[in-house]
Image (tube, rainbow, N blue to C red):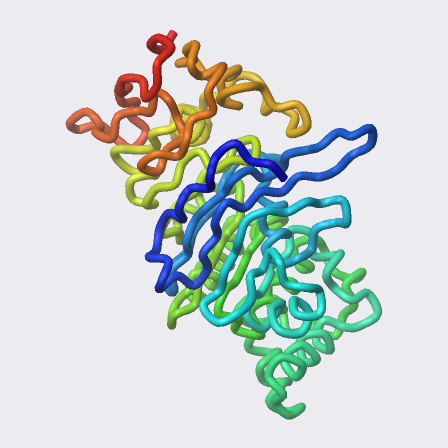
Length: 353
C-alpha cells in the first residue's frame, strides 16, 4: 500500500514500556474491478501495562477491522501495512498463522469477540470449552482446569447452572458472557474486547466492564472497542475516537468526558448525542469507506467546515486530527457537556464557515 505521509509516532505510553505499540496500521480490502476499501488508515497508539484504552466510534468506522488485524483474523483480500509490537513477541501484523495460533492468540492476546456465536464451538458445552482452553493454555491438570473454568464463568457473570449447555441453547447475552469467560480464562497479558457489552442489560454491562477493568491490573492491558460511551467512561484511562478509518482524537478519559471535553467536532458530537447530554444527533451519515472524500472525511457533516477541510487531510497533532479543533479550556463553571470556543486554523484556506 502506498502512503502519502510517514506514520505518526505512537501516542500514549512510552514505546519502550508499552504493552502494545501500534505504528502506522493501515488495512484496505481489494474488491472487484480494482476497487479498494480503506477500512483503517495510519493508526498509531501505545497501550501501557495496567491501562485501559477505549476505542470508540460509529458502526463501520474500522474499529473491529483494527482488532481483527491485530489478531491475524482478516480475510484473504485484506492488505495490511504498519507494525504492532508486543514486548516479547512477534510483530502481530507480519506474523504467520502458525505463530499467531500457537504463540499469540489466547496466550499473549485474548479476545472477547463481537460475534460470540462464531467463536464458540457448537458441539461442545461451555464447561468443556472453558476447561479445554485452560488446559491448552496453561497445561494444568483436569481438577485445576475445572476450578479455573468455574472462576472464569463467575467473573463473566455466566450462571454455573448453564455451563453444561451448548452454544445454540444460549441467548445472545449468555453467549456474550460465555465468550467473555473464554477470553478471561487464560489471563493473557493483553485483552482485546470487541463490543463486550452487546446484548447485556445495564447491570450486567457494569459487571462485565468492571471485570474487564480488573483484568488490566497486575500489569495487564485492555483495549476495549465499543460504541457504549457510558461503559468507556466507567473504566477507560484514555479514549481514542475513530472516524472513517482514522483516529481523529485520543485523550485522557478525564479530559474527554469532563471539562474541557473533546477537541474534535466529531468526538464532541458523539458526546452531545447522548440522552444525558444535549441529545443532539450528528447531522448526515458517515462516508462509505470505499468512496472517501478528499480532505477531512468529517467535513461534509461538520458545521465548522472551511476550504482547507475539503482539500487537506488533517494530521493528528497533540491528540487531535482537525484543522479547527475546539479549545482545551471550558468556560468557568461549565459542565462536561459545555461547548467551548474554537482555535484558529492549523493550515491555510480560510476560517471556519
